[in-house]
Length: 237
Image (tube, rainbow, N blue to C red; front, side):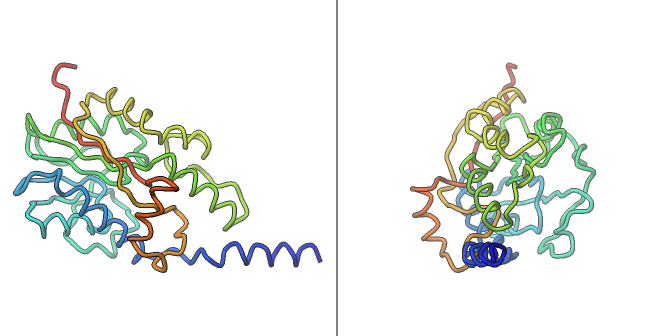
């Protein structure tokens, strides 16, 4: 009897959480690409580290940037990539120094075990006045992903990335202050900061049933899902 009631309650809770789909993720990533493309100089040579299936690289290329997408060997997106992607070991960027005008990452830094060393690699391949644009998850994203995981799977989730041992500590590591501290320690200067002004979680709440316009409105109440940092190398550090 109690078990049947619990199953019914769980069914009601998860009915508005459809199965995660690539189409939903593609829509979100393309929206974010449109948001940040203005930070990348027109006709610039851009290295995208952690390019996934190449959705954002395609947007950038269509809008006048020359993009080199880079992804780690064994990526789950390798079979569905939409552009040519070069694969690497996740530690050494396979290009010579001072080559790119900009480096771009989206929801990638939190998955890098040697994140500080990779910042040095990105700085190595940038021209002297080159920029980096890092899109990284917020504490708001971590909180709502944690909460919806409890409802959807009835379990405490693991940490999403590799920099925290549990999801509670991860929320604190995804604050603006924590990300800024990491980036400054890595030798960057923050030139500009803003958020992506869209709400989503790692559990596809409503997925495509909730329009992008509605997600933008929700972000004003529930918080944005990503920080956007525009950076230059601190040559005085």
